[in-house]
Length: 89
Image (cartoon, rainbow, N blue to C red; front, top):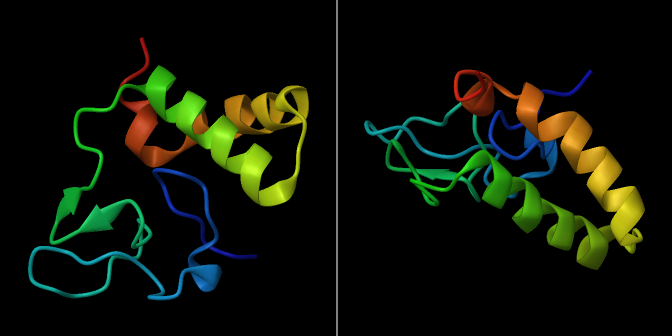
């Protein structure tokens, strides 16, 4: 079972850097290098809805999913990740 980024859902094992960096430059075990650097989110301030839209388009481009397929997968995954759970009401 792979560990996935708690911001975008990417398996950390496929991250070229094997994780983002914490403020002390240690490797984050929670977030990928595409989402997290120097202890901060690269897309700080993005809303859950905007993150979902961004990832729908990424999934369509990278995995050749239809928008319907991508949206179903992304909407099932992203809201359940650690970064986003606390933002839900």
